[in-house]
Image 1 (spheres, helix red, strand yellow):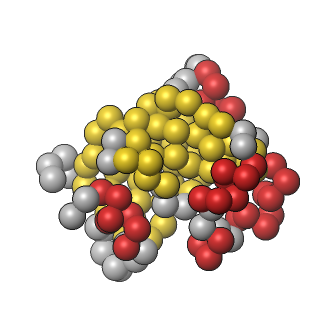
Image 2 (image 1 turned 30 degrees about the vertical axis):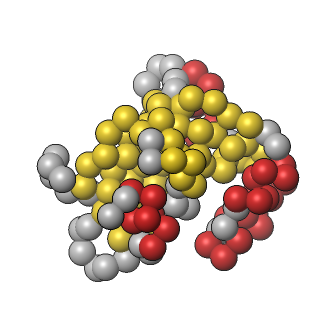
Length: 128
């Protein structure tokens, strides 16, 4: 199964990690990535810590745990490649049914941040 299909069909919870230029790490719960192609994903980001960290350090990691009651999922290692501030594009790709934070942060959601997928690992272990 393609990675894009996996994320489109699989229910679960995701966490993104970034760090600033001093290496101080931040974590936040995030929805599933939006696939541009099999090597590029995008996340809709508010003007908050995760986005701020990416201005100083382009590397991020995304952990996804499936809703199966056991430790199954994926880890994506990412490098930021660009970002956009087009509100109409953000609204077009936003998943309205799975974005509970949207209402709370609606006014601060300003960025569509694109990442290259550098590595994909299972949730536990280092082999596919």
